[in-house]
Image (cartoon, protein in one colour):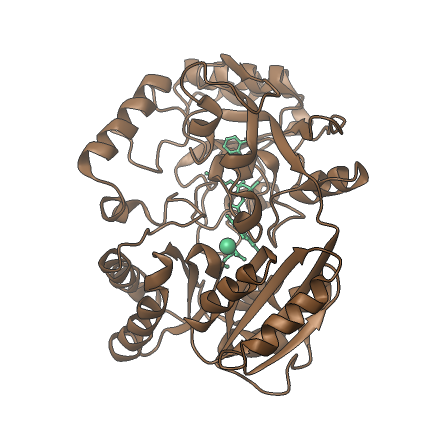
Length: 455
Ligand code: FAD
Ligand code: 2HG
Ligand code: ZN
């Protein structure tokens, strides 16, 4: 790598925003789970799109690889430079433009956090439709690049479904702007949709235009103890048929709840300790609470015990929101984090087979399962896995996912940790088309060259 590049970059963004000291760069070169420890020639922190473009132009000309980074909360190692790349951090692109109260849109810089976008929408009497426990650090550029899901997909869809426009800088410094606040616009390929989920390989997202939503007038949360995994989607179905809208539906297990309660010193939420918990948030007309209670009462064959909380139910949500953090704290090794989906009808069989397979073939791996049950999305976390067992156990879980017609990545992406198994999710032709798109847009493989299939 040419040594002059660091001074060239400093000329563009200012010396204070080119970090090279390993102590200072450590938080950019280690992932949230502690599994990936990389190294960067420099971390560059441009202030705006023009600076991002000039940084990329310089790196492209010098043949230096760049890893785009937002809040560094990704769970598949995609934001970590493992080969001395330049990290391009967008966190200084943090300007929120006014939400449009008529068109229901929000325009903001890629470095704005999800929590700030939520606050801005709320102040305008609207809702930002992506919510996830990493909200205080995850950025809008990051949620676009990973096509993040989260707990409101069931109501509003994933990030791609809510992305109207995007500004991104291509690997050679060219700025691509697809920016129309239109709900309908079929003029050619949907490039924002292509950038969504591209994991920093097609462009550096610098600005996003997202849909906002009208908040429901009445909403309630219930935490319900159930006997089986299958009871959770069955209950969700009953609530829908009772005339309620599902805002979120999350599955947790007894083991996960115990971990969280210990980690956060929380009391047991129910009078019993059931094998599974369904946290469900519903909305509807003025008598939403009555409709919810009535439906739970009628479903006495599925409901072991339940507690209801009022609007937004933060008390109940804290059990769910704390899972990822509690898992990281409890595992003696970086947890193996797998994020899978199966068709809804196959979730119970997948969980049963998985539990049996792990107990017999990997008895030392401690599984904690939870997830967005209405999407068929189960987060499989394996604690205390010895380093030599991480790859074999991952491969085994993915075999079971494939056997259940599922996907090896529901929402976190492929990144580094799942790249060896992409053939289980995509056909050879599919992979070739993805490579062709990538080499068309970034022929020199400047952007995040070591993740996703490249050549
Ligand atoms: P980073 O981690 O910085 O980057 C992630 C990927 O995007 C990398 O490949 C990076 O190169 C690329 N990238 C980042 N910014 C840009 C940009 N501006 N332009 C181009 N590429 C870029 N994910 C979910 O989907 N659903 C959840 O419910 C969820 N919950 C989480 C809870 C916790 C506690 C944690 C730690 C993580 C969770 N995640 C979840 C994962 C993570 O928060 C998301 O993937 C998020 O979208 C990453 O945003 P980020 O800004 O941190 O991106
Ligand atoms: C969530 O749903 C995230 O909270 C993180 O996707 C999942 O920690 C995990 O495995
Ligand atoms: Zn999730």
